[in-house]
Length: 278
Image (cartoon, rainbow, N blue to C red):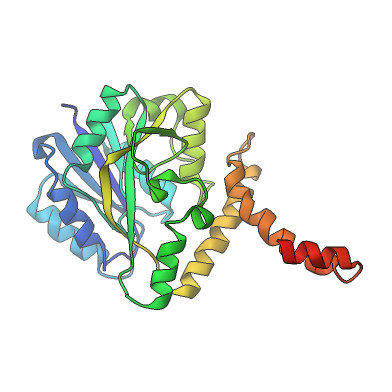
């Protein structure tokens, strides 16, 4: 069994970081073959304090200071401090099944792929109407596109990206680190580069991200989606290939279609019908 390096990038996650770490500690993967890096982006809450309590108790847990504060820098910092043959990237806003690491590592070698991940089960920490609505949106194909790791699968499936990726270390050695110019889409870029270099990403239904705590504040949800939309297009300034797929652009076409036909309907009744159709 290979040495596994788990990287958890975080910033101001005091509500979730303890639950996330606890779920990793419950893993059935041998602890002597595990190292865990909490890569913190200068949190202003109690995230670091909580993480340090775990690192004092468990020697294989290390807390890193991510001066750049951004996600890709957090991953790169964790990787540069790691020694594992397998790199697992986990989100702090989630809890993971006890077999998550074991089954992902097993699938990585059994299926001879380069990246493996499980299925995400969305939950809302605040049980209100907005929280339920956002969770439904993030679990439906209309809301999330073709992201099978959110909508689910009943069999192993080759995909473009997964949540909580489990990578061979050789992937980083082959295609390089996360692009720190891409603040909010570096994971998409990394997996596209992996695919363009002949790498394979596998989604397996047998392991699950047990709880992904969806953002239930409507204002933050809208702000996050606007940021994601911006970073779907902005990477074109930094890379010499198209770093996104058609499904990432569908929201742009949809919203442009609504406002475009609304404007053109001032000049022709046909555009009113097209607007209603859209």
